[in-house]
Length: 350
Ligand code: COI
Image (cartoon, rainbow, N blue to C red; front, side, top):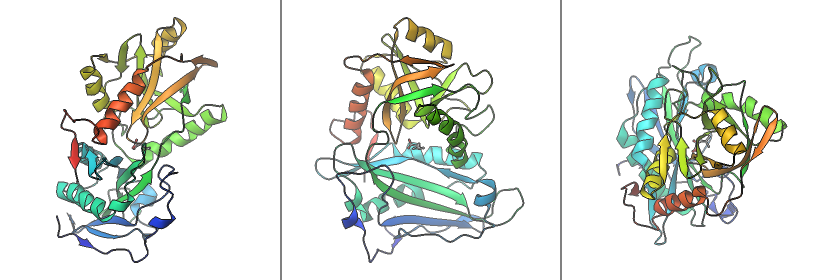
């Protein structure tokens, strides 16, 4: 889609960025892609300097939270070529989220070709330091106005990007949630709706106040089944078996999650996709069978868990040699950054 109109910035901010000490999602690249939906159709995408947007207070995003997002990354390889990881999966999930939030689905070309063009325009912003990447945020939100509680008639699609380092600094300590829920059957838990994340902030803050970093979400009905870890999917390792829950109405179909499952099988690791309970995890911890727990998501990739709290008791995970988490993280990162041959056909050159 080389016909996309590009208005380059006249005041690049890139020299003010310390690429050797990047935080996560705190510095924003010079350009963004924008595309508006009105009169029943998506218009032509444009690339413009990263800038503030102006909205009426009556825009429905402010009242009813009609908004969705995706999380993706672009990587540089040793030859300075740019790679995306399974971008079509993000596109498909974006439209699954759009449908659930009654947002008009976006044409694939606008998402995929628009993103590639944006990455070429902001090529210099893609970090090359080990452990860094360009974090990509596609979003759609309701710009259409009105207080009537019904879908808006206008939307804005934006892709903005942020050169980023690690999401978490080290291992995290988590609290198994027994009161609040992230999602419910028939709800929006499987969608990347902004409000799903806002709803996590308060319970997470309560956990932080108690000395934990994140919440482990359990099912809304019994709080007995373990479902997600903060904003990530969760894996546990019991002896030499890697276990994660099946995706559902309540669990996000994570792209890192499903890639890890395939890589683990390829590594000869015994994998189980099945529901698992808090009692099973506590029991396994007590009898020494619980070897690892980790979260998996685009932003954090794989985030090892140091220990968990449940009903006032803290359980520590053992320090083990050659953890699966590290092995799997290394392998997925090597694929993403084109350091090893991608036998799965996941990487896409920009
Ligand atoms: C991601 O992992 O990219 C996500 O979208 C989760 C986000 C809240 C950091």
